[in-house]
Length: 56
Length: 245
Length: 221
Image 1 (tube, rainbow over the protein chains, first blue to last red):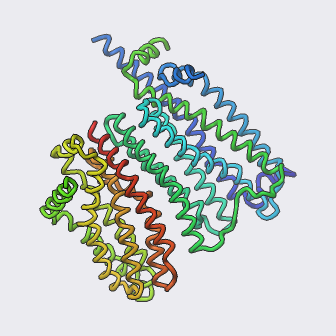
Image 2 (image 1 turned 90 degrees about the vertical axis):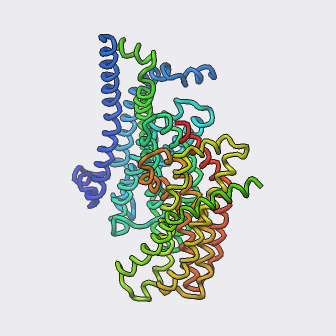
Image 3 (image 1 turned 180 degrees about the vertical axis):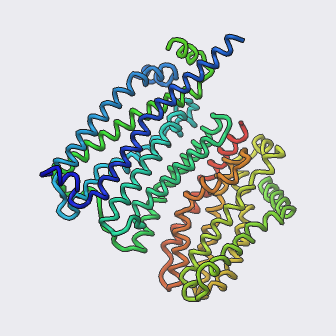
């Protein structure tokens, strides 16, 4: 790359290159965030059930 | 060494191990991918035929490689789970499948976005795109069967059989699609890594492949933790874990 | 002797359920008849489409027929008796799928003659079309049986079965339709027929293990 302008326009291929990278970014971010969130939610759920059992 | 492996197969030990390892792998993969992006999008020269359009290769090829690699991991773990009745192995298959499916999806999308400037249409019934599409169907079938049963263990074992049938079929599918393709289309435009690529083009590709592999490792571990928690939610070590954290 | 008894039992049961078994055959005819209506009854067009249309319809018809393959035996408990029988489950399954093909797959092959005529498929190639279906539909039966064994315990298994099995049937479709299509153009069609034969051998030897495994998993739950 020689300039920022060339980088942004991707030599005329911007309409194909940037959407590709965009969708990869979105899917990878989703894959990175969702499992951790599910893990925390699951732990919270197990803890809640355990408390319920103890109070009974 | 063997003792260590044996210990790793025990869910509580594995869970703590993954809890420590996954973040490291995750951040490392981010660094490697950023380096690969810098090399691929900025340093690498434009292709003499495809101009800057070829830069899609740096996400397309790693996705396609992971899509196949993940199926192999899934089927190997399924075989181990069926033969030695190892619970953790079934959890591995179930954890890897969604990741594999999402990378198959990415390989298809980036492939078709690459195809538009090169072929003139978003979709061509090219042998590799078609095989990748069938691979996505195989993943979806596996995931659907895995979740169809109320009892997790039945779902695990049923879908493990399906994964093994799939892995026997994949070479046949791949070969038949290639045969069909040469029959109907003649020569398709070859795209992908060319042997005469200069190092400034292929080194970023290797870096990206490494980064995607690390990403896969990190987030399979994370998903595997979730699968293990779901399967063991009534066991003593999970209770202990919940109380201490 | 015992093997003959198994086949005999299945054939007798099939005769009693002949209405149910006719469904895939009727489906095959109706689906094929839809194509000229949806496209264009031009004989030249139909002739080029005929191999593909007949093969896709046959594939779907066979899969529809496989859904109830183990259902009644699962519900009335005879499947559990089969597990205890001195003959291995793999053998029983092999014979079961084969007899099922005799009563559902074979009629499809015979009816394809009629449909080929209706779609203006050239008569000189009809032998190859029948040959491709004779080699291909048993493979589809065995693949469908794998799906049936895995989903027999599910209430909505009939919806899941095609998703599981259809991707696996793609090579059969490719080689089967290619054999019939090449023959129609007067080309050599030996290569795809050999592939179909090889695949038939492979499925007959390997799939009974997968089917029996699937049944064992379904019964344990």
